[in-house]
Length: 385
Image (cartoon, rainbow, N blue to C red; front, side, top):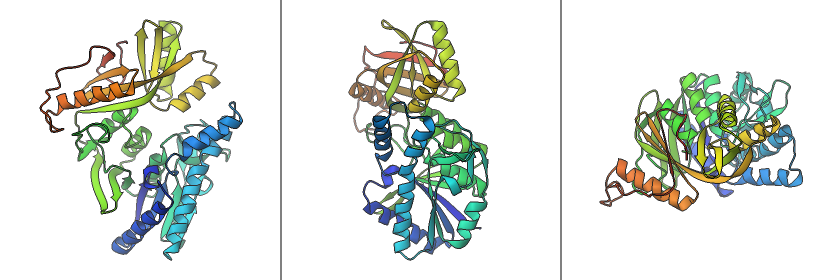
């Protein structure tokens, strides 16, 4: 069956009227390509944070399965709203959520991992409809309980669906058309990267770049799914980056709210870091006048909850901004207490990488004297703050 798999992130749904805009785009694609469409959707922008705050406000010790079930309702509502918008155009459409997507996971609530898939429910839905809207970021475990795939994980749902249907490409729509050498909203002169390798963008994502979720990229690489990054604007579709097996570029990423954990000793630090690595959580070892610790860059909610369940006594001592410089095989991670200072770091680093890209003549040689610098040759920084 000829099918297009498309994913629309939360930035595509800032207001209720945006569902009509996306629905019209789906109608245009149906008319021009004569292919059926699966549209994977995220929750409306800001919804997941509100749901998280709501349930934890009722019970700070809410069980992980309870939290997953609550967070997943954001995508369920978004899928229902897009179904309504498409139906208004008199297009045969249905929406599916975790219980009928055919995706099974383990029971790691908060950030479950895909274990098996069954494409039959999707094939049946496509037989009866031209558009199938899928709620992203959710599945069920082997016991039939709803599981959440993690924050910003609708990308993963879309890639899994493309793979299970034998579709070798997936379109990912966000507020920017692709992967840039830095966040274009923060760094003047950030340049679009036309083609990038799976490993490169996954590495960037683990250190704060937000265009694609690293677990989605890893899954796409394992199952040979090409990712086409795009943006839906008032002037139409803007095509940007293709994620394939090749392509590299120097870049810089900013993780604004990285979490710092204190550790009682170097041995505890090493043990904790190894545990986080088993969970595919990116963490950096730090040392300072206040003691030994770790800085967690991604999947923070998941990591903290897993550590709590594991009985770990490490204390969360606050947040910090991490600026990561990607240049060939070397990673340089700069830690800054002040977010605005971190942005200045990122701009200086980017200007050094791409002189004059922002229209200035600054050589980028003047750097700040405070802050911290960690240097490594892989994804495991060894230096300290």
